[in-house]
View 1 (spheres, one colour):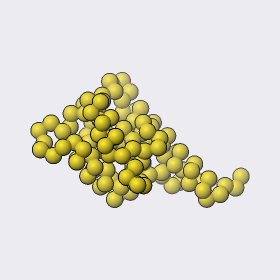
View 2 (cartoon, rainbow, N blue to C red):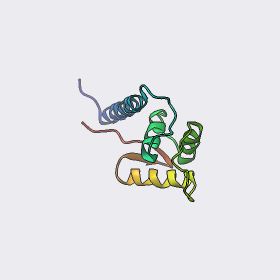
View 3 (cartoon, one colour):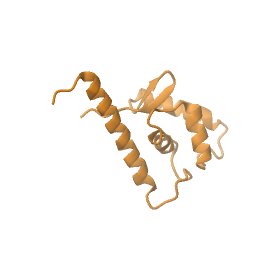
View 4 (cartoon, one colour):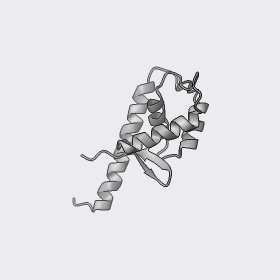
Length: 110
């Protein structure tokens, strides 16, 4: 079966979203679903894995707060600023894709 370039890209995005969701599920299997013990990047990945269309940093921060993320204790920088900066860095290294301020995991190309 021959697929168009657009169809291949769409399927690649879907596959990547599923991969990220599987990783997130594996990270919490046997544990509670809070983000207490996650690093900042892991917490961002987990939140984005639960949102197939991607999220803005503000929404990621809100979901992290709701899930009990405690990685910001003892820092002067707000969690929102830390999340924005880290998501920007993750996009710069190719781990995330940013379009109009909405971030989602980059699809892996096979």
